Structure formats: structure tokens, C-alpha cells
Image (cartoon, rainbow, N blue to C red; front, top):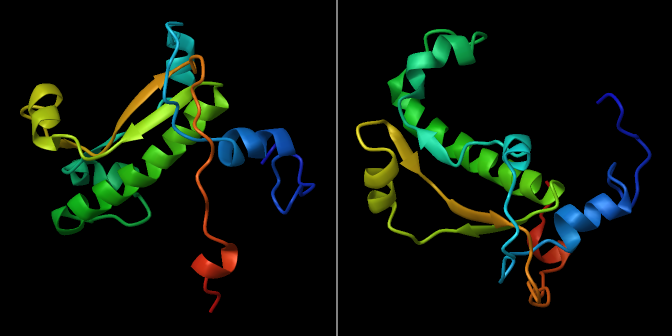
Length: 153
């Protein structure tokens, strides 16, 4: 990781300000300002928020170390990998100084019909992106303690 300090702060490589921006202070904004999101910001945070369930057409190009993969694994892998990429996308939005509002529970079929008709792409998550508006943040909700959620084997 060229250019990244390896001195750990609170057990993480990121400095405290970056930790706070991406994790501790991060939450969904309840209000966005009218300030436009620039094309430069959108390019800086590019990631996949939908899964191409037929990505196996490109298997040998994308996974050259495992040639001959196929459709049997493709849909599950596509959804899993796109879900991981969605998490990276949200971190990238925050790193760009913008607010991210990830939403599930929407009409996936309706979104797919509107934006991905006649393709193998299926929506996973809708995210509003913008500059935080006035009083954008509710207080952070409680979190479970480490020992309540982590089991070390």
C-alpha cells in the first residue's frame, strides 16, 4: 500500500480523522442540501450497486487463474460480490465528503424494469448521495459490544 502509513492508530492504519469520517461518525443523512454532486465526485466514488447475473460470460477474463468457471456459480457470486462492492461504494461516498443513504426494501422488480430491462443486471441497493443539509444527522444509535458479536475460533 504505497503512500499509506503503517503506524496503527487505535488498531487501524487510518488516522483518527479518517476513522471517524468512515466509521464512527458515519450514518445516514436525514437531510441533504441543494448543493449539486459534481461529476468529479461521482467518478471518484464509482462502484457497482447491481449484480450482473450473467457475468460468467466474462469469467475467463475476470478470473484468469480459474478458467472455465460457469453459470452454476455466477448468480450467487455476482450478488455476493456486488454486495461487497456496495459497502466499498458507501465508504467511497463518505471519503469524498458526501453523505450516503443506503436503502433496501424498495421495489426491486420495478427498479430492474425501469433501469435494467432486457439485461441480466439486478438491483441490490439504492443509495442517495449528496452533501449533508442542515441538521442532517440523528444521534448515533447504540452499538453492541465487541464481546457480544465476535467469536474467535
